[in-house]
Length: 474
Ligand code: GLU
Image 1 (spheres, helix red, strand yellow):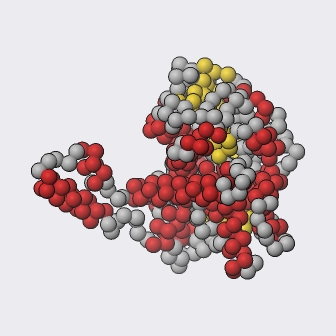
Image 2 (cartoon, helix red, strand yellow):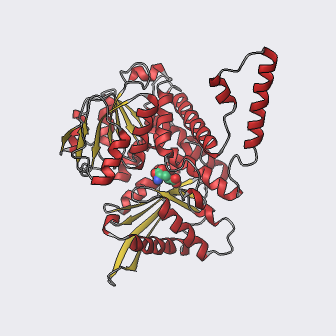
Image 3 (cartoon, rainbow, N blue to C red):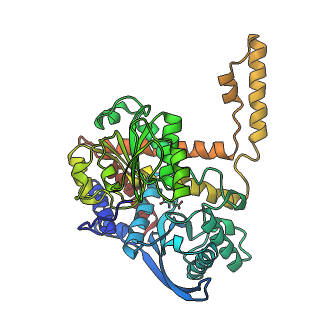
């Protein structure tokens, strides 16, 4: 992955400057803007953990609550060697706007632990995660009604299960303990479709984008996703699923994959599943059969392509490289991959940017479904699945009886579609992303000046957040 490039602004300043552009289109009582942009609280904790060799080590971690205009507040837990307080605050702010954009009724939060997870054994990571969770739970920074973490960079279902279990130990009489964290393993309070949710969400947004010919034209493109040349940075959970779905289901070609140790390229398209397996085995993309390789990953961002999907870290497109980008559509699958200055430059050039706070909101959307499942203590579809199946069968029988002909297979499959948990999660996610696209589109065209996607997305978020403040009081 490319290294962080220095920007004149911090990450949270960069987010605030972007949000500020949307405020210019709102007429608000003086002072409300400052309240909305402020980070409500940040907890820093330092705690010791005994390592396998008997040594003690002190860890530093944060949980920031950007806005509790809605509770619980929601956001991932990042375990990474570059985590800083400002980063956690910026990511918490993005969560506030993200939830509002996709109509998920939460405030924004984020957690970060300064650690390089690969330097620790699984047993050590479990002790560290549980100890961090105890710190947050005892201080009111985790709980089903107050603050609900989820996976982010460096964490996954395993860490979420440890957090849920720690919460249960500390609150043995809390019936809803599973709802204290989302992104858990499916067998332990999780929901089907959560792991791939952010990648799926990106696919659904892009499909919707290509249903709007006027937007497609703005990005100097034509047609649909079929055959589009994609460069993707980052083959972690988000990048892998997005690239896999877009290439396997929509016919897009992944012509380059940028990873920590360089970039691999193939004009005919890279097989995402095989690259991921290779990366897992070799901890590197170098040497992947049938692909050209360059150690300079950053150069990969400058390859000519139809879509550039940024699914790695923040601040990847900066003033240092923005003028070298050769794409007209940038997709922010990661949080904050384009700095404020670079964003300004890209907009001036007419490059279309599908912004993080909208495009990667699939994760928190399915987290919301998981939280509801945990609170209702029943799997979605459990009551209705067989009834739906029976209904479908009867419709087919009736049609065949009335027409004397067999219902063609493609209709039969649709009529017999089982409304199980995964089908419902996908339907809910697709609907959420498409509805948000429509709301953003309306906001873009509400005046003579057509707004860019980011400003319009923030405008949509701010409208809802200010409404809550004005109705409920601050
Ligand atoms: N970490 C993810 C994000 O940045 C998911 C957050 C959640 O599910 O609460 O959106």
